[in-house]
Length: 142
Image (cartoon, rainbow, N blue to C red):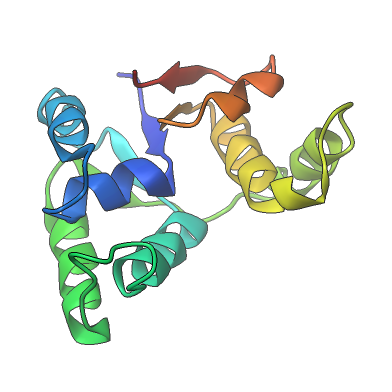
């Protein structure tokens, strides 16, 4: 079974009813098998941060308790599971941040790419910028 690590942008679109990409994220989510979607600490924090940010979601930001409820509901779904970082992720992250063309704004993206790569997961996102890492198993939702 293929395991996916979805980007924060995909997870927020899935949870925020007012997000313009919600239908695309729901279509992707509906095709997932049980225990096939990994959530890590960075994607969890990213969801919480964006879901409560009125600048990011002007028509649908929520309270901190509501954001926790949404994330907890997602993690209680049989398709999702929480995955902690393994020991090799940091060294992969260092390599990915040292790649040509990676700038100082790519710390989190490089970490998520390293997390997915280090665990053998496919990374799923709307962000085409992840194509910079050739070694990454990647699905960019169009």
